Each structure stands twice: as structure tokens, then as C-alpha cells.
Length: 197
Ligand SMILES: [Zn+2]
Image (cartoon, rainbow, N blue to C red; front, side, top):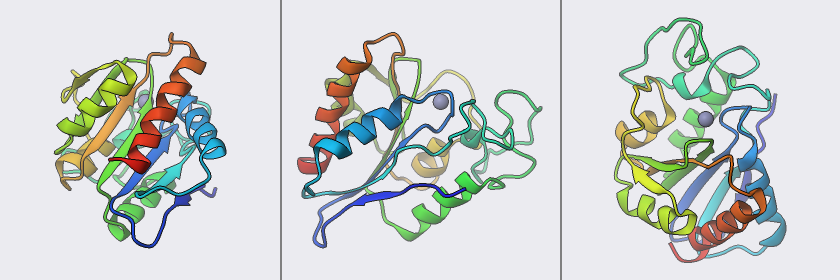
């Protein structure tokens, strides 16, 4: 499996951002928003953005190996869990998607990272990301939170935000919201990130 990484960058960028769609295969919306944005905004802005339109093409929550990628990161709180919907693998960092992101984050100094999930209608943030969460909240009209309300051992937000101090947003879209309206909101948000943030 190859993971598609699309780089929009210039040589003297101010910030470098990473935006990831479809962390969970049954939450496909992020890929639409990213592809739609890339189709309409071919020019590079002042910030570099790396896009992964679809991290997990399994069409199910877990990846093709039956592992929840968002519980597979090598964090201090990773645990060997029961083999349920949130199974974090037999070992941390066992999955190709996890290894790809760990490697990408080790090789690049990202100023912020955003992942797109559904359906909880909230901008969750980890690490020093409250101000970025507030910006996202303005574009999307969702509330912000730094506590999703349940433990997430081995999560990407813990790995990047809490343990590496990279501002990290986990945007949970409202799956009942009109997809075209949402797409327009994300277009404006991504454009802001590329040109103004
Ligand atoms: Zn998700």
C-alpha cells in the first residue's frame, strides 16, 4: 500500500502544516474536502501544506489489518487492548500508516497538524493548539475541546500534541451537516491556513 502525500510548498515558506483525511476508513469526508481544495487552489501560498487525502482506504474504522490507527501510536500511554473497534494493535507503531506518519513527523518540523474525523461536531485539540482550535471553530462553527471525554491511548493527538508539543487538531465534523456547505467551510479554512495563518 502506498500512502498518497501531496506537497504544496515553496522554498521560503513561513509555516509547514500537515492535513490528514480519512484516519478512520468509515469517515470519508476529509478526502472530499482535501481533493476539492487541491483542485481549486493549485497556486502555492505563503505556508507549505502537506496533504494526505486518505490515510486509511479500508472503508471501515480500522485498517485492513483490523487495527485502529488512532490507537497505534508509540505513546507513553499505549496499551494492549481487547480486540474491539478501538484495538491498537499487538504492538505500538506496528502498522504501515502509523510508521509512515511517525517517519514524516520525525523528518519534518510541522507547525501544526490537522486530522479530519466524524461525527461528533467538535474541534478537539492536543498540545499548544487552543488558538488554532479557535480559528477552526470560527470557520466551522463548532465548539472546541481539549478533552474528547474518553481515554484515547496511543492516539495521534497524544503522540503529536501532548508528547511532541506540536499544535494538533482533531476535527470531528457533523455528519448530518450538508456536505457541500461543509466543503465550502473547509475550503475557506484551508485557504486561511495556506495564506494567512
Ligand atoms: Zn475517527
